[in-house]
Image (cartoon, rainbow, N blue to C red; front, side, top):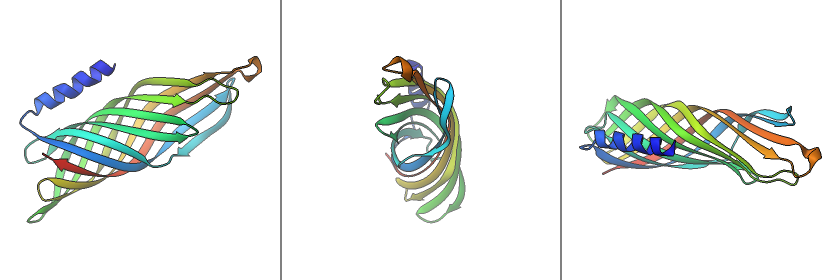
Length: 195
């Protein structure tokens, strides 16, 4: 699966060979729809707000900057040494809203396809557990360009994650603990540089 995503990212980059290289850094927060069970009985669930996250973005944009392919990596801290990581390949279309002499404001929207991993740390009565698999989603937001090479962006994303980590009990009475993450929504702000 990782090879497929890498091949897709390289193909996207090759398709925009004459394009600008874009590097970016993101910071944001997310909300997860999750459920935790022990031996099939729900012990907690609902919406989990996580601490802030950092993300890195590498992309290639068309000359003039109306569309771009990108690859981004985002790591989420779920607390208690638990984490989720998402690797996404996406396509975004940018639509001009306002243009000044040096600055420009654009709306953007696009799709993403990626690979996610969920790692749950060992606990007093349970081994560690993990899961990984495909995830997909959409993103939208605003981008404010300051000259031709720097832009600030504010965006939101929604993804269907579908990860389920199982942790085996260290003693028989502990049974099996499962953590499922179905969907994720997040906002971010970031800065991108074009080369």
